[in-house]
View 1 (cartoon, rainbow, N blue to C red):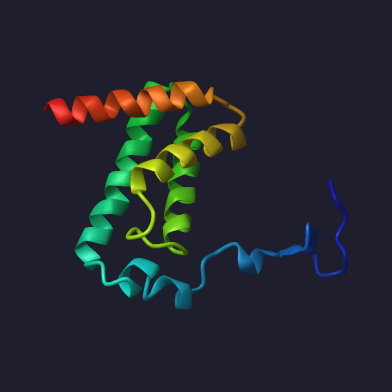
View 2: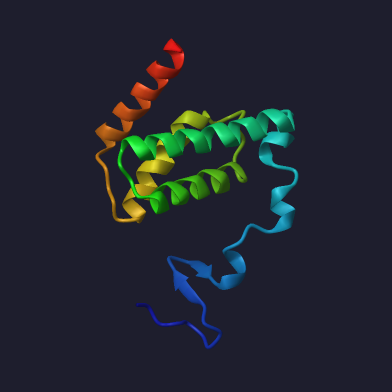
Length: 129
């Protein structure tokens, strides 16, 4: 464990100052979102947020990941899209990336090939419904 750089219990990791105060997204970053700034309808943005989380949940089940890994992936997904726009970034690619990263973070790693295969299977299943 690293030692604090000062007496206020803050740690310095690669130039990023970590404290309890910067772990939560500030209100001024929540509205307007980057997608709203790109003129995306708020209802469509909400649908894409929900769809991305559903993809993460479904893929996590197929990959037999623990629920904590799926929740971490959904958290990563939501945080990413509060800083980037759905207009410029395809939600499915980032759902895939988030589940892969969260599995590694939560020490339940899956091969990238397995993640790609699961998302490919889910896409084929959705298109054939």
